[in-house]
Amino acid sequence: MKKSDVRAKAVAVERPLRILMIAPTSFFSDYGGHIRILEETYTLQEMGHQVAIVTYYKGSDMPGLDIRRTAPLPWRPDYEVGSSRHKIAFDVYLAWQSLVEAVRFKPDVIHGHMHEGALIGGVLARLLRRPLVFDFQGSMTAEMTDHNFLRKDGRLYRLAFRLEKFINHLPQAILTSSIKATRLLQDEFKLPADKLVPLPDCANPDRFNPEKFTPDMKQALRQQLGIPDDRPIVAYLGLLTDYQGVPHLIEAAQRLKQAGENCHFLIMGYPNVAHYKRVAEQAGVLDCITFTGKVQYQHAPAYLALGDIAVAPKMSASEGSGKLLNYMALAQPVVAYDSAVHREYLADLGVYAPSGDVAAFTEAIATLLHQPDHRRELGQQLRQRALQTYSWQKAGEHIVSLYRKLTK
Image (cartoon, rainbow, N blue to C red):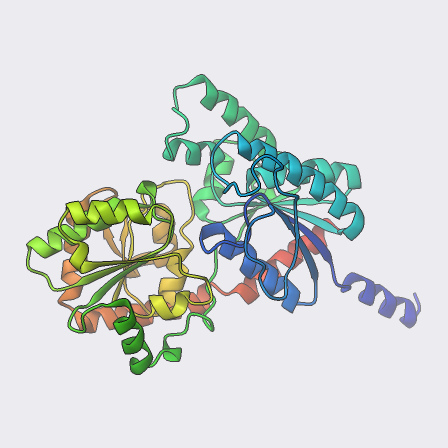
C-alpha cells in the first residue's frame, strides 16, 4: 500500500462523526438525565463531532447545541410532559420528527436516551442501516413501580416488562450509568456482557469548582435567600417528589430542630414546591427550611456551594443519582441512603444510613454538624475522587471509541 493511501485511510478513520440523539423529554430542563445528555453533547462537540438532539417542543435552548424540536400538540400546546396518555402523543410526534431529522442530518450513529428514545432509534437504525446506542439510566418497569404507576404483581407490569425486554435487545450497544444497571440488564433481561458498556455519570469539576465562590459571594447569596448567618446549611438539589425522599428531608429537619440542632435546610428544585412548603409548615420547620424552587443549571454551582453538608435521600434501587457528582465536585460531604448506586459513586467516603431510615439519616447529619474538620476532609477527598474517576473527557473518549467500533 502506498504511503498516501495509508494517510488517506487514517484521515477517513478519524473523520468527525455525526450523531443523532433522540431525547424523549422536554430538553433542556434542570434535573437528572438532562444533565447527562447536556454534558455528553458538549463533550462530543468539543472533540470535534456533530450532534443533533431531537426532543419535545418544550424545554430550554442551551447555547451551542443543535436542538431540533417536535411541533406542539394541537389540542394541548402548553401541556407539561408527565405520565399520562398525552405522553403517547408526544412520542408519536417525536418519532416523526426523528425520521425527518435523520433524513436531513444523515447520522453515522443514532444515540437513544431512555426507553422511548431507544425504541424510536431502533426503528430508524434499521431503516437507515446505522448502529443504535442506547443510553440506559434505569429500568423502565422498575421506575414505574417505584413511582406507583405499576404493581409488580399486575398484568400491566408483565406487559411493560416484555416491552422493556424487547427494547433492550434492539441496540448494538448499551451505555449503562451504573454497575447495578449493568448487572440488572445481564440478570433480568439476559443481555450479553459484550453488549454492555459501563459509563457512569460524570462531574464537571470546572463548573462545580468550590474555589470559584468566595466567602463574600456566598454571603451575598445567603442574605438574598434569607438564611441566618449562624446556621450550617444542609443542601439538596433535585426533583421535589416523594420518591426522591423530600418528605424525609422535612422530617429530618423536624427531628434536628426538636433536638436543638442549629442548622438550615436549603432544598432546591421543583415541582411541588407549594405542597412541600405546606408539609414543612405543618411540621413546624418552615423557619429552618428554604425552598428556592427551580434553579437553572448555570446557577446551580453557586447555590450548591452554600452547603456545608449535601444530602441524597433517594431510595430507588434502579435509578441513577448523578447529583452526587456535583456535590463531590464542590468538595461537600454527602449523607446518603445506603444503595449500590450511591456506594458506586461515594465508595467508603459517603456517610450512609439504611434506606428509608429517617432516624439514622438524621443522626448522620447531626454527627457531621459537630465535625467541621471531618466535613472538610471528606469533601476534599470526594472532590479528588470526582476528578480522578468521573471525568467527562474520559467518558467522551470512551463513547467515541464505541461509535468508531460500531461504524467500522
